[in-house]
Length: 79
Image (cartoon, rainbow, N blue to C red):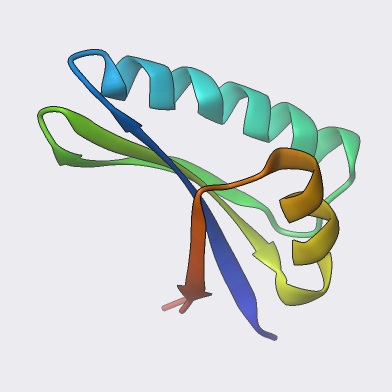
C-alpha cells in the first residue's frame, strides 16, 4: 500500500521544540480521525531547522492535507 509522509517545517532557535509540540497535535488528530497505521515524528535537519511529520495511507492523504495544510509531502517507503 502506498503511504505518504506529510511534513511541516519549523525554523529558528526553537524549531525542535515547536516541531516536538506539533507532533502532539498530529497524534491527537490521527486518533480523532481513526487513521490507519499513522507514524509521527521529528527530524532535525540542522540546529535551526526541524520538521514534524505524519505518515498516512495514500487514500487518507487528501482529507488530512486539507485539514492540516502540511508544507510539503513525499512518498514514504517502509523498510
